[in-house]
Image 1 (tube, rainbow, N blue to C red):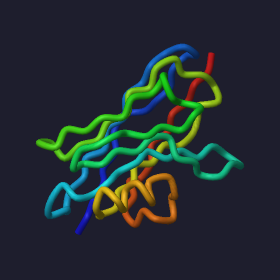
Image 2: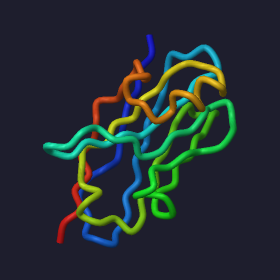
Image 3: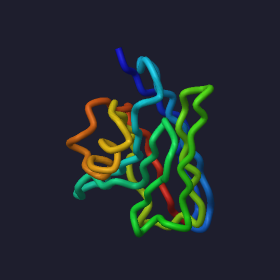
Amino acid sequence: QVHLVESGGGSVQPGGSLSLSCEVSGFANNRYFTAWFRQAPGKEREVVATIYFGGGIEYYADNVKDRFTISRDNAKNTMYLLMNSLNPEDSAVYYCAAEPGTYADYIRKKFSFSQYNYWGQGTQVTVSS
């Protein structure tokens, strides 16, 4: 059984920072990829950043590039999202997601939420003054 448990999130003023964590369990090896998605009220779920646990390049949505950093700790099977320079448009429920596969699968599927079969419970991020 694959499980994803998120932590972090909360409320912060514009310009502030927050960090999210997602502990992944149940995969037999590091051949899987993970992502952060977010969904604001009335909007579609959108990808924020993705990473492959077997190594390789991270990818970011254009609207978070240079502000957010995705990282992983293979020893802890945990993915992180460090969010800097937050603005109200970043307010949303943030979800972590995971999917087993090769690096080629990751390249092909990384941005599509329909390709991920395992999801965390979601955590609220609110940016407001």
